Each structure stands twice: as structure tokens, then as C-alpha cells.
Image (cartoon, rainbow, N blue to C red; front, side):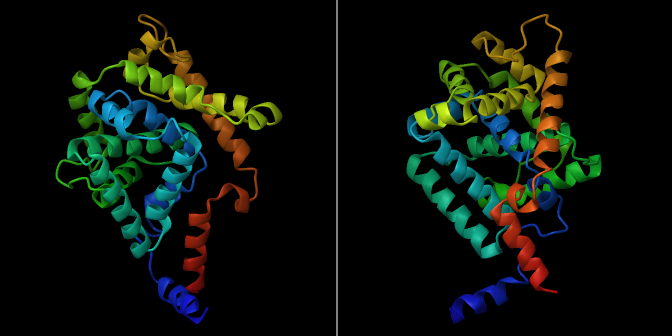
Length: 282
């Protein structure tokens, strides 16, 4: 017990990779980050090599909810944990990637950029006020998280403009492969325990969340998914604006509803622990 107390005292001055003054702390505390997480998965699936690697090695289909929880825990630890906690989490992820042969720097950068773009788009479309300068700061801050996960710093976008240029460069090589089509349908209609599906509103709630996340994709990505006949996909020649409006309205409604909850329910445990660490400094 005495050791734990000493450790807590030592941790009080440790703001981890980012700290309370960062854009990352504010943005990642938003409950709509989950929409961004699911959007990132749709986007990542359009990279044939990345999707092939996931299909070969990932257990996402066997345990989708556990995988989402673990990903959320990783993002929370890297964002709000102490530097030691973040570095330990990053080391574990790098070890897993090496063991599974998923440590290709270019593919890791793709995953990183999809997440950063999706987190930023989701919270802004949901109504969080993020200025252009803050958005650039956020992208630059996230390079630290990229390096922690094994992404080389050179070549990793440090601004919104660089992020857009990155996607522009990779777009010709993206494709709706059978694996991507299957992954997107799995995200929209994942398996659920029978009791959860029948006795709770989990299924309709997830459908709303997954559909909104899909609707937040860039129009070029939705056009690629049109061949899969997914809800909110854009058929050639269709009016694209209604899908954009609907996704934005859904995201804003969800955010407004969640923000009515007490802080203890809407804030994640990592964020609460970080706030307590800062408060303990006095």
C-alpha cells in the first residue's frame, strides 16, 4: 500500500505524452470519439494490403466487442496515462505487430492517419468547436502517438493539409476488395449475444452509431462502398448532400444526448484518472 501511495505521488507531475493544455486531451475526452473509431475502421478497410493483413491475423470477427474495448483502452492509456504507462502500452502493441507480421511502416502509417482523420472529423461534425489552428495542432500532437506505435516520424502528416495530401496520394491504390466489403457489412451488423440483442436496445443503437460513422466518411470513400449496397453509400450521380446532412445531424444529436449524462458516466476512466492526477498537484 505504501508503494502505491508513493507511486501516486510520483505520478502527480507526469502529464504523459500530451498534457491538459493539449488539443488531444480535449478532443479525446469527447464522447463522439467512438464514432470516429468506427469511421476509421471503414476507411482502413479500403487499403487492400492493410485489409489482407487484418484478415490473416486479426481476431476481430471472433471477438469484435473485446477488440473495440482493447482499442479504446489503448487510446485512453496513450492519451491520458503517465509517460511510463503510455510507453508500456506502445511497447505491447509493437510486440504484437512484430509477432503477427503487421509492422510494415507504411501500413502502420495508414492506420494512424485513418484514426487521426476520423477522430478529428467525428468530433467537429458532432459540434465540438475546433479551430483550424487547433486542428493542425492536434494532427501534429498525434505524431507522438504514431511513433509510439512504431510509425516512423518522417513522412507522417503534421497538419490537416498534409493529412489531406496523404490521402490524395494513396487514393489511387485503394479498392473495395471482397475483404473490405465483408468487413464493412460486419461493422454494420456485428454478432451480439442473444440476450443482449433481444432484451436491450443494443442492436438498434449500434445500427445508428455504425450508420452515422459510415455517413461521416469522405464522399470518395462512400462512393467506393456504393458497390457493396451499404446504407448511406453514394451511388454514382446521386445527390451527396443529404447523406452528409443526416450523418452530421445524427452525430450532433447523439453528442447532445450523451452530454446530458453526469461526468462520471460520460467520461472514460483514463480521463478521470488524469484529471485526478492534475488536481492532486494543487
